[in-house]
Amino acid sequence: MKAYIEEAERDLLHTYNRYQIVLDRGEGVYLYDTDGKKYLDFVSGIAVFALGYGNKEYNDALKAQIDKVIHTSNYYYNVPAIEAARKLKKVSGMDRVFFTNSGAEAVEGAIKAARKYAYLKDGCTDHEIIAMNHSFHGRTFGALSVTGNPKYREPFEPMIGHVKFADLNDIDSIKSQLTDKTCAIILETVQGEGGLYPASEEFLRQVRALCDEEDILLILDEIQCGMGRTGYMYAWQKYGVKPDIMTTAKALGCGVPVGAFLLTEKVAANSLVAGDHGTTYGGNPLACAAIEKVLDLFEKDHIIDNVREVAPYLEQRLEELKSKYDCITERRGTGLMQGLVFDHPVREIIDRALEKGLILINAGAEIIRFVPPLVITRKNVDEMISILDTCIGS
Image: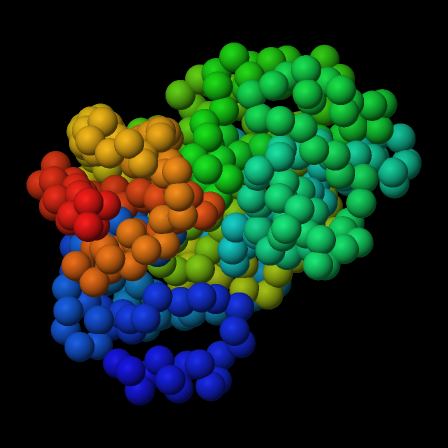
């Protein structure tokens, strides 16, 4: 394993501070490194591997598609894309789908659709977007431009421009940034990288009402919080506050790189047309076969029911840790998207957990984030808490 790491450090661009293990295979909610050590996974590839590892039906579906055709391009139709779009529309309640290769690309498409919608109304190209402070939408230029953390943006400025920032759960903050040039408001229904902050029902309803009044588009980023993680297929569905444009990715393909942005019919009919947007790989048969099987398995295996059953128990056990240690100042989050806030950086705790066979990640320097596979059990929660307890107390 040491030799692999040394080779990677020689060959790969140093844009990650990787943990010093080489993961090799997975089974259920456990991962194994190249030396055979077993780890309980409470990261799931950053909220990606919702079904856990080694799901036979999922694997078989991908193998079968590989034997048919992997890629054809968007000059032609393919059956998996048609089936995946139909099933995604059903669970999301949206009307039109554009498949991408990643969450960041989904955000790029959402921004383009919003600006084209506004352009078609008045022919102007100076429309503004309001995004949220502490948000995270991706690393590409458009997505980075609406990411509300200056440390990510400043080294790469100038950004795309005409973007303003407001505060999540503060409607007056949004109204203070509103002008007659505002074309869209973008926010994560639950902020992930920014610290596990859910948008409140009142705030979402206020933003929706404001958008309806001013003919502004509401873009909800459900890349991390979507696909069942909050106990609803998409987090906004808990409150019934439907967006005009929605982005999704991560668990959408459960490991196959894929994302999508979805639009209402009104926006789709008055924004992007042929030639406005495209992708070579997006919507290819392999990726869409993954989406199709993931959505089938979510229904067949009652994944969301499991989230609703296990999530309250995870919250309870995290609250017990918070009560035990003064250094833990807060637990926050929703569903199987939880965070513990510490009064000091958490990297050492995460490192100790890794040594003891538990994979965790942070969300900011002082927050441990818990985004496990959605198939975890109470027993898995107990195992995680037992290990984490020893790491905090040591």
